[in-house]
Length: 108
Image (cartoon, rainbow, N blue to C red; front, side, top):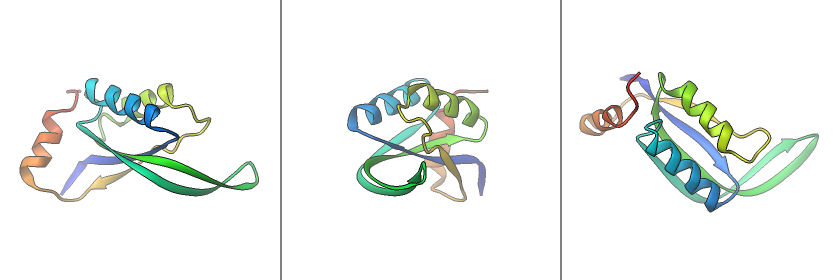
């Protein structure tokens, strides 16, 4: 079990935003890796209306310790008024990959 590690989820409106956020998070060691998943359809309630948006999904490998910095940085870079930034714990994983994530995050 690796309760200190997280996969953060964040939707973005376009490839440019996805690339900018991913590059920044990895270069600043706030994320070890960001997967960019194209073409997800999001259905959500916003300002009393049901909305449909085609978005991209970022899967961000990070840690609980880094989370506050990662969240702040995404909020600085993201164009949405209220971006989705949520995280789930990594319960298990291949040992060498888990260590790689830890080795590629900023030391706090």
